[in-house]
Amino acid sequence: MQKKFISNLAFLVILNFLVKPIAIFGIDATVQNQVGADSYGIYFSLLNFSMLFNIILDFGINNFTTKNIAQYPHIASKYIGKILIFRLILFLFYAVFSFSIAFVLNWNNYELYLLSFLVLNQMLVTFIAYIRSHFSGLLLFKTEAILGILDRLLLIFICGAVLYFPISNVPFKIEWFIWIQTICYGLTLIVGFILLFGKIKLPKLQYNAAFSIAIIRKSFPYALLILLMMVYTRVDSVMIERMHINGKAESAYYAKGFRLVNAFFMFAMLFSNLLLPLFSRMFQKKEDVSPLFSTASKLLIGGSILLAVISFFNSEYILSLIYTTEIDVSSPSFQLLMISFIGMCSTIIFGTLLTAKGNMFFLNTVAGIGILINFGINFYLIPIYGATGAAIATCITQTIVSGIQLAYCINELKIPFSALFMIRFVLFIGSLLAMSYFIKVDSILLLFTVLTLAFLSMILFRFIDLKALYGILKSSSEE
Image 1 (tube, rainbow, N blue to C red):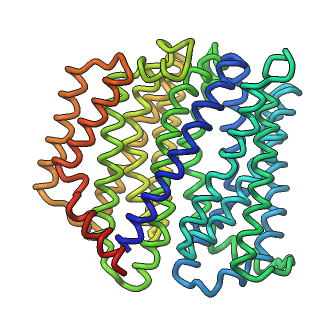
Image 2 (cartoon, helix red, strand yellow; image 1 turned 90 degrees about the vertical axis):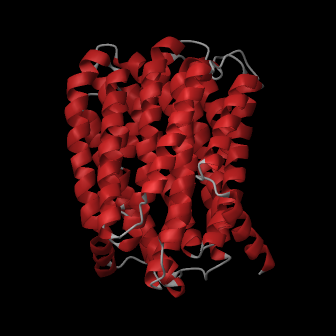
């Protein structure tokens, strides 16, 4: 499994690195620069609002599908026809619920108009994710990866043409961006269905009430976990826009830092996409997960600390590479969000392991604690500090949640945690802090130098074990 993990991780990282940074910084950030803080602030708030209730669309079915197909591959084509119809019904509930809450929040007609497309986009995204969950469960990671970047690739070409080669003098509008996203998701969904039905037989579409109820019961723990985590990771921007006196602008400031963190998080989620089916199959076969867990956690958590420290000390310069205005007011929230990124990555590793093991009650309890902490801090800090207050809440929440999960994994699953590793861990962080404190980045060359030195520190303190990786890849190539 380590061989499969390392080889597929390399492919996923390279593929995503070639596409997603361009989509995020070349397209999304350019849209924000062109439409302005207020327009983008409305979009960002509505986007995160539409994601809050995405669980009604998903209901944990994707994680449930990945885990079960990884353990029992023969069921891949058994239920898909019934689930597709069931998901269309879930979409109706999701749309009604979302607009009901939107009316309560008193959004105007223009905001409701934008929300209608964002709601449609969430349906398309959820169906794409469902198709990808089949490929993950079947361990067809390369196919899943290609489908995972296709919508971003289409966005680069279509939206890039409109942004950089305009055919009129009309300023770019935020609704254009949303419409183009809808087109890209739609095309990706069509390709996904074609690829999936090339692997499994074409299903017969039918609705079965008893089956739907059974799926709800089995998926409910996964659905609840996604909902709880979505609330304490996505509600911040909505609360900023609603609670702060200058909410739309503060939401836009928060979005600038959040975009970078979200870009890094997309790469971190590649670990989860690989590890959930691998851990699930290993647990089903009663294999030892410790070697794979150790390799993955060192790579991801070590990498997150590297990025967090460098970004914290050089936040304004890094933001200036992407944005042209409001860098100083966006920097504090970005610094804090990058610190919270360490907790996010830790949660990916620990949460994925516990999900594969089936410890859903514990995960949901911890996520519920996370919501209480996040809401309590946000209600107090956002009206005073806006984006910075929300970032403080995120930082504290992610640190506490990941800490509880770590303690549980060590105690209950007997994950090894040696004193020698802790010494290397402390020395690694110390080297990053010292390097970032004494080297002030003010050019691309210096930024590249710092990143290179930090990467060498990961090797020196064995967060990246080159000898072990070489052995894994060599033995994989010989098979």
